[in-house]
Amino acid sequence: MNNEPLSVPKCVRFVELNAKALRALADGDLAGGSTEAGVALDEHFVGDRARWIFGYRADQLAKDPSVGPWIARAAVSEPDGTVVGDAGFHGPPDEAGVVEVGYTVVPAYRRQGYARAMLRALLVRAAAEPDVRTVRATIRSDNDASLATIKGFGFTRVGERGNERDGLELVFEVPADAIQS
Image (cartoon, rainbow, N blue to C red; front, side):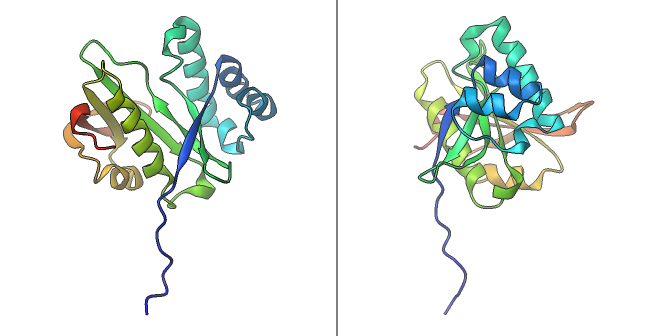
């Protein structure tokens, strides 16, 4: 008899991180960010990298409020209500109908299926949008966990690019009409 636990699919819902929540998190104010979001956020939300990302998203939202429905959300595990990460798109679809996904799992909840649950929810959302034709995922070449996460979702590697902050990144895409809900 196999004594390994059964893998139970995870379920997440997304909670908006509005401009005030994003700015509070960028400033390192976890309590203020949590109050604005209406959920208890994890310390991970005010780590150095998270603060940079949330600051960038706050600036993006200040420049163009229409990006709000697309960008950063807290990912909340259901039914227990624990915040397990954040996810969203880098912005609305571009002129070619491409949106790029982004997700991060709080370290204490990694390797439990939450990244796949977040990605699944993002893909379903993207496929439901008439202006989205392609979903992109850009992943550091050494990020084995994220590379494993996208497997089984129909992504195809379409290229690579480098940048100063993250080094070599691999670019994957999936057509929106190929996404299964």
